[in-house]
Length: 145
Image (cartoon, rainbow, N blue to C red):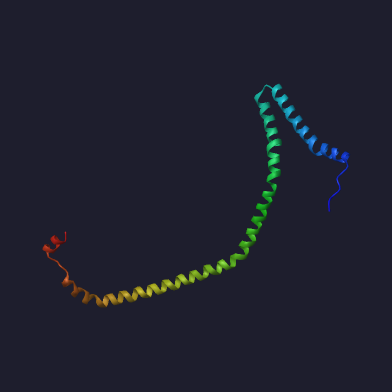
């Protein structure tokens, strides 16, 4: 269903209030600022005027435009806090599991090392007898080089 068009008088009044007057007000503000800058000869006064105009013409519209983005970031931060609160117990249990697993593996490796040292200690006399097959002559060393 189509909405009825407003009468021409209402349209002109809304156009005047919402488009033309803000543009004329902004233009008038800039014109006054230029006149003040031309009249004032001191640098400090011009700097104050420049700061005020920067605030009004750049920072205020920037704040208005970026406010929805700021709200999105706030919502995301709150959501991350809730997610963290929900995952913290699971991550803690995972940390405890990996720590117990590390301790078991460490005990197993210590037992394996101890048994291996015992076996090598028992085999030591036999390993010394196998050294007779090694070449110890100087002639073999020269040949290897």
